Amino acid sequence: MTAVEPATKKKRISKKNKSAWRKTDIQDVEQFLEDQRQEERVGTFADKQDEDLFVVDSSLQKSKPTVLSVKQKRKLNAKKPMRTYQALENTSRVQDPIAKRNHVRQKKNGRNIELEVCNPTKPRHRQANSDRAQYYVKLEQRLADKKNKKLAVEKDIWQEVDFRDEIPGLKDEKGWISRDLALHTAGNIGKKVVKTHSSLHHKTTKAKKFELPHPGMSYNPAPEDHQALIDTVVEREEGIIKKEQHLKRVTTSMFSKVTPEERDRRRLQEMSQGIEDEEEVAEQDENGQKSGEKKEDDEEKPYHTINAPVENKKKSKQARRKELKQKELTRQTELKRKLKQQTADLIRIKSIRHELDDEEEDLNDLKKRRKQRAEKAKFEPKRLGRHKFEEPDLDLNLPEEIAGNLRNVKTESSLLKDRFHTLQRNNMLPTTRLVSRKKAKVKRFERNSHKEPGVSYQDLKDRRRAAAIAAKAAADIKI
Image (cartoon, rainbow, N blue to C red; front, side, top):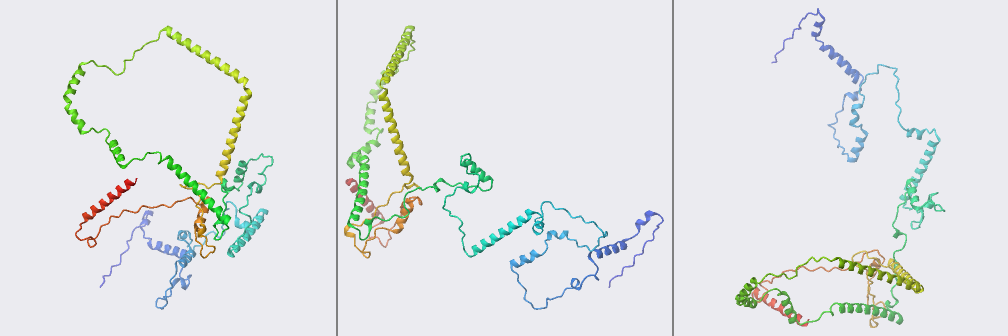
């Protein structure tokens, strides 16, 4: 059983004074007013529809739950208002107490682009609309061409065009506007010119993209062409042999040859420099007493330096006067010699002029040869890497190797190698060489099952060592 609380008896207080009214309980009045204000904000139940008050329970119905993808969820969330702006929404149903309120529309700063597009009132608005329409027409055309995979080639990309021809006022016939000023002006008016390297505007090599092989390389060549190819190959090989002989003459042949015994003796003598022999040490010990007596005699003698002492000898006035007189005489003699040389040069002015002309002519010839050499080097294969480009060997078939038909021809060249050398000659690829890597030394052991019976590993090791020493001695004898 629950206990029933007795009803609280209201206190009766005196309300004679104004301060006594503060003790009056007005909680029920405040609650009534709060409910009334809540109904004004939210609305009463009579004003709301059934859908707002009741919810149909569909949990008993057997329906498969719809699984939305991430993209569908994003679309639904995009339709909902953002939670950030929920605090700014007006949920109150209270009517405005002032029915006739003067609503002042705030004036927006800047231009109203939407109003200009929809209701153009000025000529510039109409011009902007027409330009915008043309832009969209071109855009649709570009999209259609891209869809149909049509490339609109409006100009030749390889054609060399001066940018000053496209911008009026930059190309002055009198030469008042320089190229640097034209570049500066073009950059400031929104038509900046991209500077390219000078090598893009002129050829850097005279090598052809594809060179026909020598007629003598054919599978059935003419005798004259085949002989010309043989002469070319022989001339190149003679040049290589001559160069090797020159290097051998200035390196290997310059040194004398000695026998292995003499070589070992010289090496031993060189490495033992500064080391005293045991015999010399023994002889020094025997003669120690005699040397001790000599040292005592040397100590008794007075000390003398190797170099004589320096004396400060000052020159006398007479010696100084003679020296000055000699210097003056030498100066006068040199002056007379120069004057005599000038007189002689005046006489041979014509010969001096001819010498100067010959020297100038030699200098001009030197400049011309250097210029030709520089012009020739400009079109030669460049050194793009560590190694310099060298012309590959010509493919040659000897007369007895020529078959006369493609079925029995002996192949000497490779199309891939030929293309590779052509790219290197045209400065498109750096010259490379085949790198041979050293194989790692592997220590090998013989299995016990493969060893000879009665032979240990140490015996085999000694045999190998003896064989290596014998081979080395044979190689030294050949040298």
